[in-house]
Image (cartoon, rainbow, N blue to C red; front, side, top):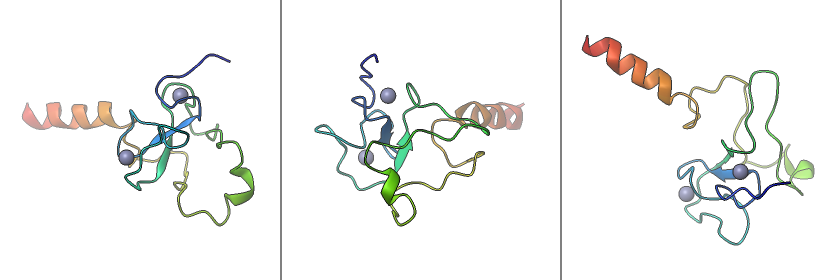
Length: 92
Ligand SMILES: [Zn+2]
Ligand SMILES: [Zn+2]
């Protein structure tokens, strides 16, 4: 498995700081929820993101993990293109 510099290979990044790992030695400490790493843990409507190792047992009760609905417009990694499209169409 190749090393992912984005998330430090933990597969999750900070939701508020998507360039910082959510777990591990370099984990962001801002307290925001985690988000799947856009580099190595991409997900779509039919594929849920991989959970960090050791988190499977905690998924039900964990409030740290983001709600995964498949189409999450609050996901900071996905809607940038749509935001841009909205801005462009609004400006024209
Ligand atoms: Zn953060
Ligand atoms: Zn990654």
